[in-house]
Length: 123
View (cartoon, rainbow, N blue to C red):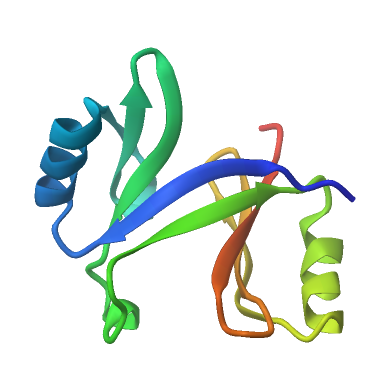
């Protein structure tokens, strides 16, 4: 199954500084989307192209994590993809869960490198 990169996301302790930094370096702009219980999510734009977002690291579950970029791979069957991750020796520490317009799962490969899966869901 081909799972092309679908989204890039920066996890940051200070989203304002990060947005300023990437805006200065690359000329990126941002917009906001209300994610309900998850709060406000900011999306990166390069001109008219929306390609990624920035997540504020505020919850206790982020303790000990360094700011980092996360790549999301798209799949049409997130449950099967999570099963294959585990079969290949990886982990799914944050099993698939709903987000507006889809489902995501946060995974780790055999060496501990994080990546995410994304499945679009029609509402």
